Amino acid sequence: MANPIREEKIMSIELTVPLRRRWTRALGIAAMGLAAMVMAGCASHYIDGATKEVNASMFKKPAAPAPVQVLFEFETKGVSNTRATDALKKQVVEQVRASGLFSATDEKPAASGALLGIKLNNVPMSDDAFSKGFATGLTFGLAGSQVSDGYICTVNYVAPGKKPVVKVVRHAIHTTMGAAATPGNSTKAKDINEAVNTMVRQIVGNALNDLSHDPAFN
Image (cartoon, one colour):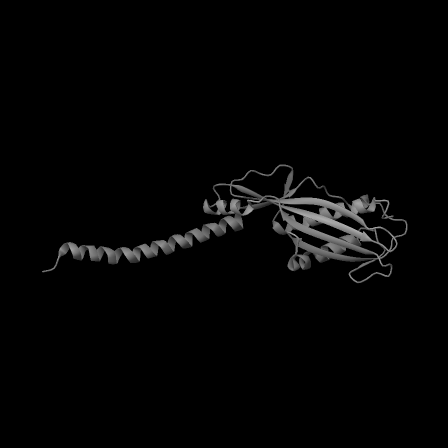
């Protein structure tokens, strides 16, 4: 004789397992979708205002500009970042060329033997950057967070018979996610590309300006 209680339990299990799987799969897809929305649509990028824009008109132009070889490298935490170097090299070289500080700029050795090395290092400004971003993802943007990326630009000018001239400038880009407050003393960028391009232009411009006013350069 069949046991109605046992049969009811078996039917309940058979119905519950597929249902549980469907719900698990649906929730997983929903979570990934919400996380993607947070990452793609809710992140805002701000350019730190401590480093101001410096136009080439403010540079102190040398009486007799000489040609120079320009070498640019982008680093992440002190390690060479080839992709970032390739992406930003043209912008940096063009900015040096338009500075008016040199008669000619090239990535090949210059006839004068002068060399201008520009190194841009991206360093985290907070040790818990990853944990902050992770917390924002878990709450789907309801709990805001801010992560700041620091940038250190080192310009090293070497000319034959002269001591090297080194200038260092710092900058930062702030990224907020979720309901985080707007960073103070900063300018919002349209997107991350605009933020990076503006930061690079400003930090290199300041370094070149400092170089131009150093008596050892002229």
